[in-house]
Length: 396
Ligand SMILES: Cc1cc2nc3c(=O)[nH]c(=O)nc-3n(C[C@H](O)[C@H](O)[C@H](O)COP(=O)(O)OP(=O)(O)OC[C@H]3O[C@@H](n4cnc5c(N)ncnc54)[C@H](O)[C@@H]3O)c2cc1C
Image 1 (cartoon, helix red, strand yellow):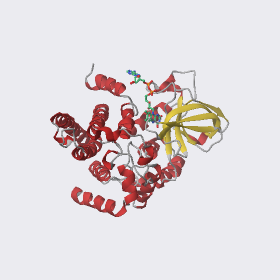
Image 2: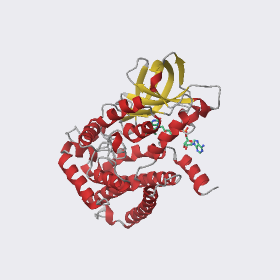
Image 3: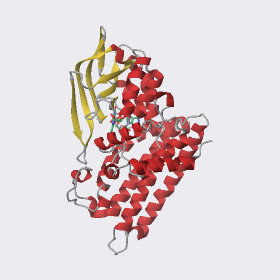
Image 4: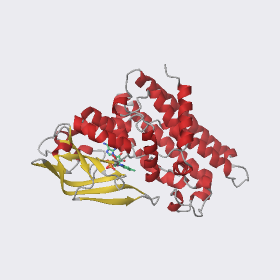
């Protein structure tokens, strides 16, 4: 029987010993699911050196082999300590999928490189005409001897400007129904014929890109699973994108920050915003909903520990968790008031040491608000999740 109190202490001791002030600053200035890239990578290397780079992986592939409670404790403590978030498309999504669908060479080559941070992966699923309706994707891969020739484009590709590899869904047969003609390819982003355009977001930062493929030669050995069976591979990978995230950990962190902000700012009556009855009421309502969500997450955790899986409940948690996160963002803007207005993306660079246009407690509010608008879009939109809930939970 694991001693979880001792484990929590071990994690805290590790964080105290290894999180430098620069890394903590990067964590504090994180306004999305991604932290400053350099800080995230540096942190991943520290975790790797300690054998903790992949909390969710089994030991045989270099993971920690932790149970679900240990993973929860680790995630919670990292969040509370302001650890930066490494780019996770490799370790969180591609790795577990390769353990199931990859061949021995693919596993032996790619899994260790994910752990060490040598490979940084981007996810090439969405296209300009294919998001919710992913199977309508148009990027083609035509077999030519030992290669596939890839042509087309992927969009909203997070972190592609930092990545050296991309996993892509490509069309290998146009004559059959869409889902039956898709394959899954691993592509080196340095291959000739690939160009990456950065997309600047409303908050002035670049997180997403559009990736173009023009006659790109990809060795056929980079196919995962069978040709034209990529849809099964893609869906399996999505289980790791959508599952396993604990929204309440993020929400509790947001709530603590919000209380600090609302305690720091005086309203026009001269009292801290936190004593404003209308604000307190809205805050209490959101907090109660977060507590209810926590119960649902704990229920899922219990069922997963007993060998079950989250199923359609993960759609419910995604919907409620992301929408509550957005409500906390609105409350944060409300709490800090005018201090949220100045547009100064540089202040959010952990290397920047110059003057800032707002006090520290208000620096991230607007960028977080803007960035988090996307939370109800990526990983499956809120409307798509509601359809799943209606069909699979409510049986409508
Ligand atoms: C910040 C961000 C990061 C992303 N990162 C990545 C990434 O790394 N890799 C990647 O491959 N993709 C990524 N995406 C893309 C993301 O997966 C898609 O944006 C998402 O699947 C929605 O697709 P879409 O943008 O084409 O919108 P659409 O599918 O065109 O949807 C437009 C609107 O119509 C609604 N709608 C569509 N179909 C239905 C339906 N059947 N029923 C009801 N309503 C419907 C949607 O809910 C939405 O409101 C990212 C997106 C964002 C915003």
